[in-house]
Amino acid sequence: MPEPDRSGPAAPGSVGIVRTQAFSFGKPPDEMPLESGKKLGPITLAYETYGRLTPAKDNAIMVLSALSGDAHAAGLHAAHDAKPGWWDNMIGPGKPLDTDRYFVICSNLIGGCMGSTGPSSVNPATGKPYGLSFPVLTIRDMVDAECRLLDHLGIPALLAVIGGSIGGMQALQWAISYPDRVRLSIPIAASCRPSAQAIAFNAVGRHAIMSDPDWRGGDYYGKKPPSGGLSLARMVGHITYLSEASMHQKFGRRLQEKEAYGYDFTTEFEVESYLHHKGDHFVKRFDANSYLFITKAMDYFDLGRAHGTLRKALAGVASKFLVLSFTSDWLFPSVQSKEIVTALRQNRVDVVYQEIESDHGHDSFLVQTGDMGRLVSSFLAQGMRRGGAR
Image (cartoon, helix red, strand yellow):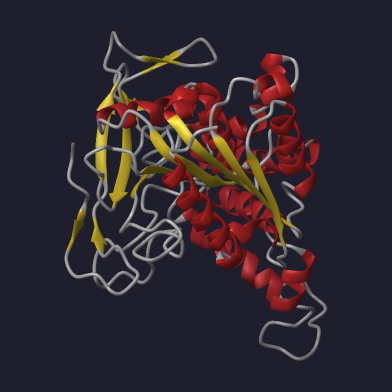
């Protein structure tokens, strides 16, 4: 069992200086089978851990990342880092995912571009990056890979799985695919199947990337990347993560560094400048092909499709559930979380549901963690005391 990747001094509430680790598996001829019928291997997963595993190995929590998240969920890689991990406000001593009590694991998705095997990785059969020859993935494939990581860490079962957005989809899939390995499931701002509207926004983002002349059919590695298309995809996607109220509060109709209209097509409004900034920043850390593959996996996610109904899909789960949604989330609105809750209750599953007041839209699970954190902390503590029994 690897020791937690913690070193150096820790500020109060921080897990301190951490390092990303790597786990590889699926070397030919033992590649991992995929839902599409294809196989993938070898596979590397980048991951980080925080806290310590108990001798009974009963305090492990798997944090499931969002679309652009990576393995670095908490702490710092170096003392001079400008920002901590992407969910640092939730993970650490005394925080909702209290590393004085729990052993927290987070990995980068397969299909990603931040240490895990994805389309930018070298295809061993050709010696060149996969590009579009990388197999199309599903949420179930991502969870299967995460389960291999759990085996590698020597952990027979998780106290909890938790994640927002695509991470919430993974939490649902974990409970279905591995019911004997999950005691508590916490899907946040998630859906059992994205709506036509959500699929449409993803499709526009993919079209923006694939229309960029620098995309070159996905074969752009070692050349100029499709930065314009990826930036536009991120701009479109980011709009769906916010709410009208949050955008009004942040920007209103304020102009950027001027007092009067220029009557031209330059960037004039603050909100325009903000979106350009988000898009430009994103292209520096993310791969365009990974954006295609991960958003396609989200679109394919439909728990009821393979089982006939959502109720049947959730019939075999054994974990308790905490389902959380946000009032201003219009990408995965609360009605979709309530659909999950209804199906769970029809199966007599122990489920707690809370719709949290927030003006931050879909991004609420990342930025407004007060009420969410208290609910998660209480749910985990009760589950730990009761042994997670259904």
